[in-house]
Length: 268
Ligand SMILES: *[C@@H]1O[C@H](CO)[C@@H](O)[C@H](O)[C@H]1NC(C)=O
Ligand SMILES: *[C@@H]1O[C@H](CO)[C@@H](O)[C@H](O)[C@H]1NC(C)=O
Ligand SMILES: *[C@@H]1O[C@H](CO)[C@@H](O)[C@H](O)[C@H]1NC(C)=O
Image (cartoon, rainbow, N blue to C red; front, side, top):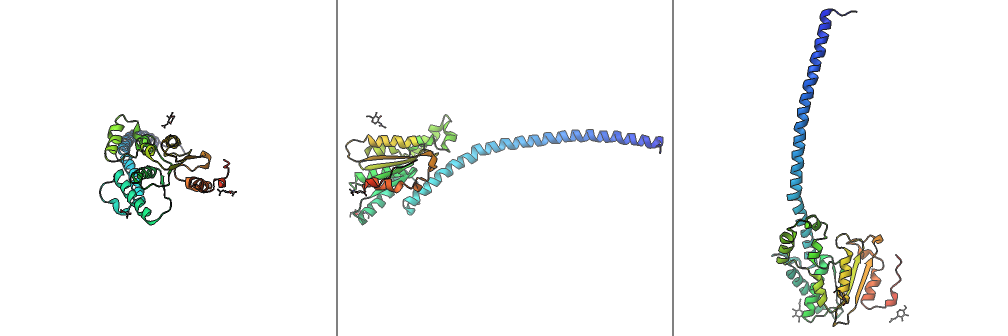
């Protein structure tokens, strides 16, 4: 059926108004698009600012507070009052050592891991000064100094490139009693030292373990031994899992002077 003129006209008009609507919609759409784009950009900028100024500092703060908790559980729980300084924690460890010394005549070995290895070294240095000679010191996944570690720690690295990192982070920590200068403690220690480090340690690089071994071996005026065990990266012990090594008990036996021929040949 042929449409009447008027109905054809209406159809054209409808199509035109449809186009107009489309155009209008496109304009609206574009405006809306720009609006959301701006909102998105503002959100992005805000997110970056929040991450830079709130999240990252919190992460750094939290990472330190985890270590403080470890320190406290290894020391005395009631020492959590007052501010945390290395000297305070080492003093707690000294008390603990003295308490154990009073309980037994057996040889005492001090073992520290990560940040704890620095506390262990400092504790050994302090008790040696008091004439309470321990038999040996074991440093597991240890760093040479807190300052060296700050520049390579996964959280420290985020900020270490900043030009004022030393003044705003390293120096204030040092001034607030975070010294943990394992290298200099080790130089003055008289007892035997065993150092354990995994090649794939992602928190404390194993070159620190090697350096500590060098320092320990260089000690003069002591007949004490220095032993270093480096665990192959393929074992995937990283920073925390050296204790899982099946040969560790033999290394300990060798270190404490038990029958050394028990130590089997390690096949990597
Ligand atoms: C261990 O014994 C000595 C000497 O008797 C004493 O001075 C010291 O306070 C004791 N240490 C602890 C933690 O009880
Ligand atoms: C250890 O001693 C050697 C030889 O005296 C020296 O070259 C090296 O720098 C010393 N290493 C450390 C870490 O003191
Ligand atoms: C060590 O062990 C080996 C074999 O088990 C034995 O022949 C040797 O006498 C032991 N040495 C000492 C000092 O106990």
